[in-house]
Each structure stands twice: as structure tokens, then as C-alpha cells.
Image 1: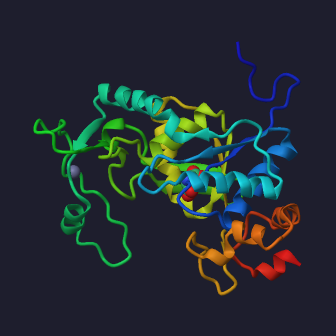
Image 2: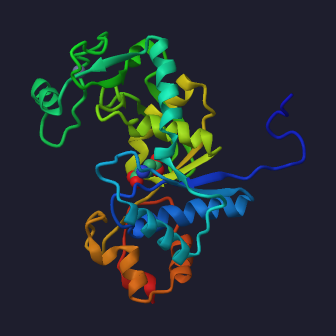
Length: 294
Ligand code: GLU
Ligand code: ZN
């Protein structure tokens, strides 16, 4: 029998992860995420893990995987285990999808992005919620490519989800900002949310540390964890680092990549120490490289 929380003598630390997509070079914002994930594992006596989220095969490049490993090594952040390549878990993802299909919770969607947008007539900057056009449909007999969507209403789970965020405090959000989510894509790869929750569980992640730009994904991910019978991890959504002029850091800003800093001979562990000293909570923070490197 399992001991109840708080019982026994072994305190178990946080298992955290850094889960970048190898679609570009890492920048300071990624380093901020990684150092805090590593710090929370280290200070609690837990484990810091790396997962390469390489399921979007059209956008991922092996060179970026190498870059991620080199950047973490340079920062002095050694994962506690061999990195998990998300693409290697595709059949496990498929098995979970199949179980949901057998429960009657999925439908085949043949809509194109253009068709969904035309039907929704969104205002500029608005998220387009999928209106459920294909709900109840089986895969087309004529071989038309389709995506599997989850029928959220059919799950019977609450669409409003709450969690106590370690950086942001009590949070509440809806699992359906985009309507019924795609769980399996037309290109025959799992969608981000499905792969993410299955892999967090497979890696034994107990604390998800990531930027607040991903907090809108959390209600749906919590719903999926409940649906799939996975343990619910805790969450810390940290503030974002901005460029000195207040813009969002983006993978396309070459000058701010960790690789560029490395090439200029910057001190990786010193940078990691400075980022560790910046609290993960609080307003988004514009900073110049000079502030961090001197
Ligand atoms: N792979 C995602 C990204 O690079 C992060 C996913 C996550 O941390 O849940 O933005
Ligand atoms: Zn559809």
C-alpha cells in the first residue's frame, strides 16, 4: 500500500523538466526556464530532466538538438538522465489515442485552417475556436487526410480548471479556448498537448516549469491528465524575459541566442547564476545582455 502524502521518512523532491522544441536556437528566455527548473529540482533534492519536443517533423532540425545540448552544457545544467526524444514515444502516444477512440471520445476532422477561419470570421488578434463542424464523424472512407479531435463535452470533465501556481498563485482557466482540440494531426503525429501530458507522466515529472505564455495550455492539459488517468503535476509559470526594448525574445533574434553568447566567450555558469537570482514571479522583465554579462 502506498503511504499517504506526508507519511514516512523519505521526502521526495520535485522532478522538473526543460522541454524545448528543436525548431531554432535557444535564447535567454529558454535559459531562464531551464535554470529555474534545474534550481527547483536541485534545492528540493529532486531531478532535472530534458525532453526534446521534436514531433513537428517539418520544423525540427537535428542541428538544433545538438545546439540545445551544447547550450545546457555551457550553462552548467546537466540533466539527471539521458534526454527523452519525444518522437521516440510516438507509438505510446498512439496507444493512448486509440484508448480514447475506443471510449467514443474522438472524431475525425477534415477541416482546413482556411475553412475554420472562414466559418468563424474572427476579429483581428482573436483566437479562432474550432466550431465543432465534424463532431461525431468517423474517418472518411475515401482516404481524405483527417485529424483526430477530442469531443470535450463528451468527456464529462469540467471545462474550467484550477491550479495553485507556484509563481502566479491560484489560477483558473478554460480548457476550450480553441474549441475541441486536435489530439492527432493530419500528418500522423501526435499534437503537442497529448504528447506533452503523456511524456510528463512517463518521465515522472511532478512540477512543470515553463513560461507564462504557455499558461493558457494548462487547463486543457490538466483535463487530459484526468481523462487519461495520469498524475497531475504542479505548475510554475514564470514571467518572461523581454529584449532591452521590451519586445518578446524570439528564436529569430540571432544576437540574443545562447549560441551567439557562447561564441562570444561569455561565461555560461555566471550567466546561469545571474538568471537563477532573478525571481520567476513578477512582471515580465526587459533586460539588456549587458546587465547579465558584466
Ligand atoms: N516545447 C514547448 C516549447 O518549446 C514547451 C512545452 C512545455 O514546456 O510544456 O515552447
Ligand atoms: Zn472539422
